[in-house]
Image (tube, rainbow, N blue to C red; front, side):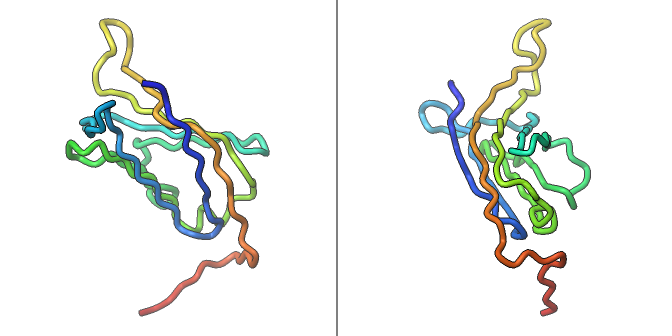
Length: 135
């Protein structure tokens, strides 16, 4: 199945969350437990960033595949990370890698599920500090 184009915005200085459910042609979730995921983007300034489910530092980003058969993948960026973005747009690819080989000696099965454009919605009043409320 060919990858789908999905363009989205990230608001500078705001927390970002994207949830994707990987489904088959009949709209049924695909069990991707044990798989890994990766998003790679290249900004309009030429910077390349890679985000994977192998990340061990959640202060930078959170990228998880839910441990059920729902086919759900969550990608999250904290506000302090998006606040630091100085680019205005990027092009990205979103890939999945299976936990087993595609065929004998063929390596893991890798599929691009999404691609597209990211637009950073710049803040009017960019602050070096984030909102910190005590409740």
